[in-house]
Amino acid sequence: MLLAINANNTNVKFGVIDGDRIIGEWRQHTSAMRTADEHAVWLVQLMAMEGIETKAITDAIIASVVPQATFNLRRLCTRYFGCTPLVLGEPNISYGIQIKGQGAGADRICNTIGAAVLFPKTPMIIVDFGTATTFDVVDEEGSYCGGVIAPGINLSIEALVNATALLPRIVVERPAHVIGTNTVECMHAGVFWGYVGLIEGIVARIKGEFGRPMRVISTGGLAPVFDGSTTVIEQIVPDITARGLIEIYRRNRK
Image (tube, rainbow, N blue to C red):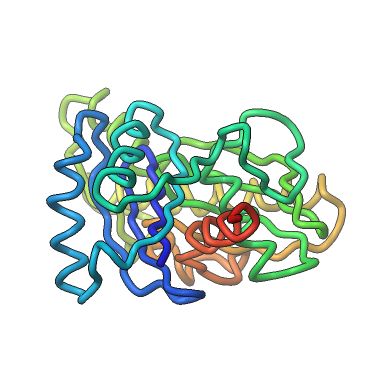
């Protein structure tokens, strides 16, 4: 079985894959200070609750955008699962796609490859609602063409709260009305519908610049919050990053 680890700025996601099936998934808050032993105490117990033994793990792959956390995640794999992980970004990793431009994070490469596997020969826009809200552009050949990075919705809320004296911290949810009648309703409307406007505006501009029909999908922890709020997003694919990790592993395993 394969242990797939995706370390983002907010959460580290662990998945156990048996063939094509994801048989276990867990999330842990990202901390660069968390040791391999701490990861193991938490993860091994959760695996046991699902009936998955540590000795069943034969391979591992890590995608990380938090370099400070990568060392202990690598050590988790070698010490507790007895395997040397593939780590995205290292010179020996082959992605099997063309990456146009520079600076694409491991999560965005995984999204690109996952999209190409699930929707072959289809130009795509992947809207990822994470710590940042990203828009990844994939062409017919499955190549990463670039994209857009915008502040994530929770980051925007934190900035609003921290820069004002009286505005409260709110949870992201779809408001009943655009016109709020109190402070909290006004904040919900501004945050939620402001992001819908951002999504629709950026998607329209990407499509205009790309010049060909494109499929638009979404992923990330907050993707379900926006489900049905805009017609530009056609489908939520929550496991697209994991699917990309699985495919990268297949392309690199000996």
